[in-house]
Length: 171
Image (cartoon, rainbow, N blue to C red; front, top):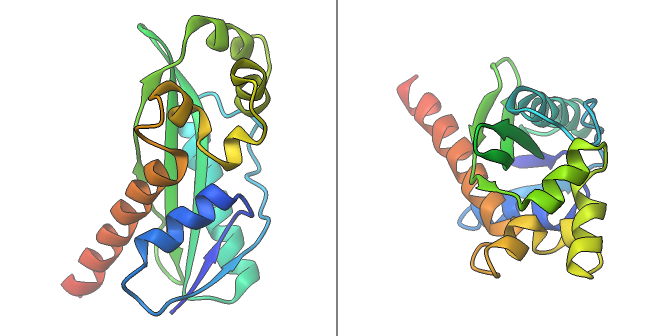
């Protein structure tokens, strides 16, 4: 099986590989644009970014499955939440989607996002670390390392693969 990953982000690539660790899959990662805002600001926009990456990956990569992963934020009555979504596409099938962990952002971070900044650079400034989005992510910073970005996305990819195998097994 050849799996095309719609990103070059090391945390997301690691997540996909972790979810397929017990298979003999071949992986190819491509820099596929999300075609949504640099900072998705709703579940719908974040889901669409994941679907766009998955479809673009499958279309360009000549594989069996395309996987797209996208992080964003969602406003709630409690404050601004981190949201994470994934999509899996296979030829001739509708996209499968799954979401992951959600936590509230501190108001000082949320205010900067509402003002138009993107979470990645804000987190680098906030944490005084480089490449946060390619390493532990905001989730890693705000859970004190208990959950890292690749682990969170691994859970999402497992949800995608589980749904896909469920559909295949029912046919």
